[in-house]
Length: 76
Image (tube, rainbow, N blue to C red; front, side, top):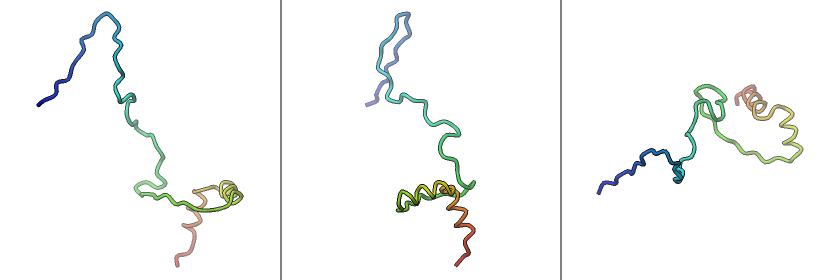
């Protein structure tokens, strides 16, 4: 059985109907986290450290600093 979509005709009186479930306009262009390197997928890494170490990591430059250190390290 085929479902029919009901369409309400516009009238001069205001209409108080329920909002559609999708209240937003959907994803927009340019939103979200920018890639670290164009065309390269990234992964999330979780580390355990003390609060003092976390603060120092933030002062050193955070994730960008870690990535630079890894790239500079000699290959083993």
